[in-house]
Length: 137
Image 1: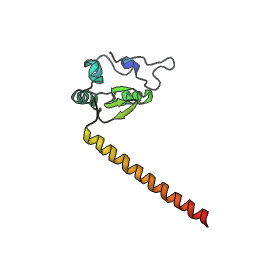
Image 2: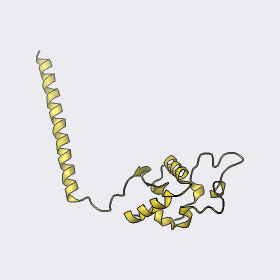
Image 3: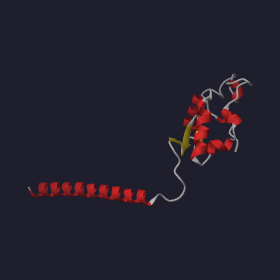
Image 4: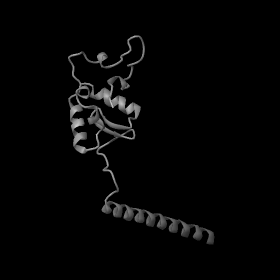
């Protein structure tokens, strides 16, 4: 998969007679953008090490802010854009590891759900007793 810089929706890039198409509108031939020098798959990697490497490449890029702005406006479904990791159109800190969650996490989630259900039940019981008291008077 190749990532073209012209795919970024930089505001105004395709409007009017001075439409800015491609990277030449922003940088001359002497500018070497990291995303054009690295393997494009690096920016769509699964491993945390490769994701960190892609973010580091973006760190020194002169187009970082424009790239991030474009990715946010498009709600990019995945990848590293402007030094940030995207998943489902949102910036996330780390990718979730593939597979099932660890047993400890499942147990914590179940406890949390039970506590939330108990709180709901207590709220329901207190509101029910208030209604009964109001009906009795």
